[in-house]
Length: 89
Picture 1 (cartoon, rainbow, N blue to C red):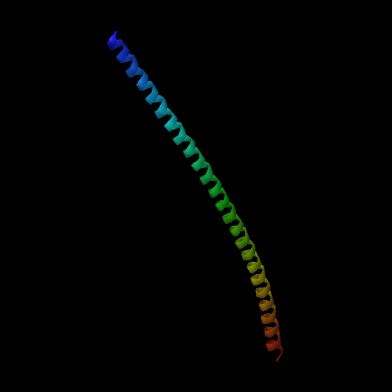
Picture 2 (cartoon, rainbow, N blue to C red):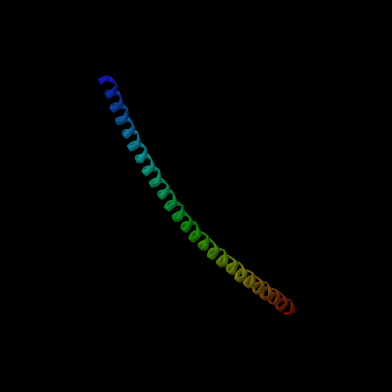
């Protein structure tokens, strides 16, 4: 009878310990989920900022290309006029 009571107490203690360990694992899991969520949010913000920067650079490059094309066409016209002028003389 005494052994039976001791076994029940040991089993009860193990069950309490198991519940305590389960609670700790649940808490750790919740913390990990929160960290993952925060990390995802920070990464999304970072990628959005990066995307906006890239869009800005793309616009600047397009404008630079348009300016370059304009200047090249003006230079070509001036060279043509200079050739025509030198041919006339």
